[in-house]
Length: 282
Length: 82
Image (cartoon, rainbow over all chains, first blue to last red; front, top):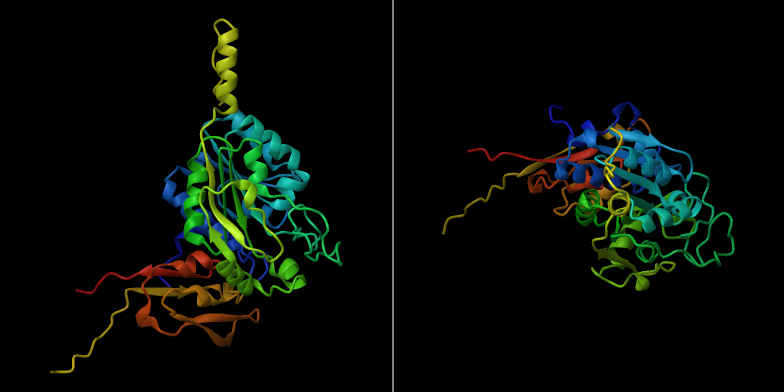
């Protein structure tokens, strides 16, 4: 075979085949991310990927970029440190729902409140995949997980609404079925300045789809195709996902707000005479 | 009226790394021109992999490459033979 897949130069091919299950949507999101990176034409030295723990956390290990695999839930604090040390770096946090909004939930809301210049890509599969399908803060009511055999009774997070209400400047949601829109959204997330949040609904056939009788990965993708509705600019209050309910996709929020560093430099230069604005240590 | 045989030239091609495939079937399902079908053969891990069933209708859009979670398939556009 003389032709080579263009995405292979962005992957650590010695680690492929990856550990993700057949029908898992994570590989599809990685495909879209690599294509979005190619379209932004950013030098790869100026990009950094930070992941936490979980199935999605392995993305950082498979991408041949400046990637970091951090402790559980602490992807955002690590990324903040990286970004503030070198503000020219574009830091992308690529992690799962269990990592970002359950154990790392407080970091998530604080980073959004301060408007740290981070791109957050949250792959939501409604469950804790790697540890065996326990109930997650995103599991819809009535869904079966290993820890809720009679159906979940906890109200889940509506992630776009959470991000919007704490001050994210960009909020979008797509499923792994919408690969073209997902690639465009990832490009926008990488180029946007400020706390930008992209939620990706991804199938987990082994733990979520099988227990909830949705079927394998392909059946879940068909479910997304039939039950998703594109509503750009929708009020994020209305986009909660119910069990086997419709999935509202689109770009919900795109606004401008000064970032943490801009605010800090402005405030301190007002109050401190001869203040030299901070623009990184390197 | 003379019968003109319309010879359709493929505008693209699909390249498959069968050993890396896990048989999820995304490419077969979502190919816009229905070029692919599932093969009856197995790879060494025991998964069925896709095969090119209708090569002349491939447009080289690379949507299969975007969907494939295992980086095992991709499409290329062919240059028109003059």
